[in-house]
Image (cartoon, rainbow, N blue to C red):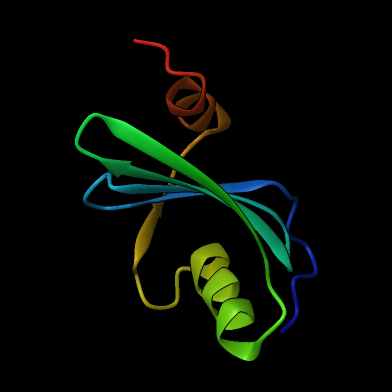
Length: 82
């Protein structure tokens, strides 16, 4: 899995706006999961192959599971700004 040329962090979200991601580097990402009006935030350190492939898919959008967003949109949600 070659991430050469990728400038981290990279920001993505699911098309349904239920999960937002900040990929910090190829083995670490943050996720904000939106359930109704609640937000849950997780930091995931990838150790196993499926986690590493998930990060790869988010970054390169091979499976079209997510769309690219800017840092501002991610921080807006994370900081709870309306």
